[in-house]
Image 1 (cartoon, rainbow, N blue to C red):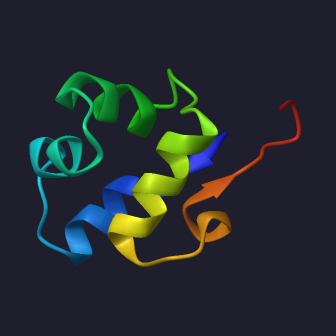
Image 2: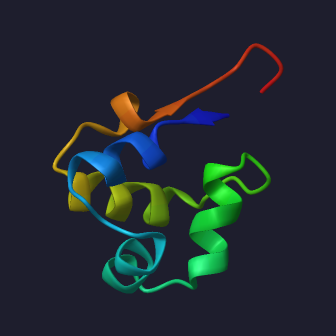
Image 3: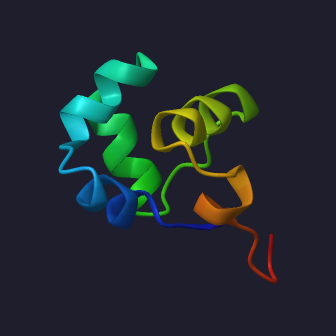
Length: 66
């Protein structure tokens, strides 16, 4: 699964720690999601989309192998 979290964070001048605090996870979790090493739960993905005020589909995208 691809994501644009890093781009969205940059638009809002937000660090990984800032986002992690807003969605109540560790900074390491945000880092793992950005790196594509961890696929977030539906609830976490929705929380992230809400923080960025962006539709979920614009942040997360399925790849062919998913």
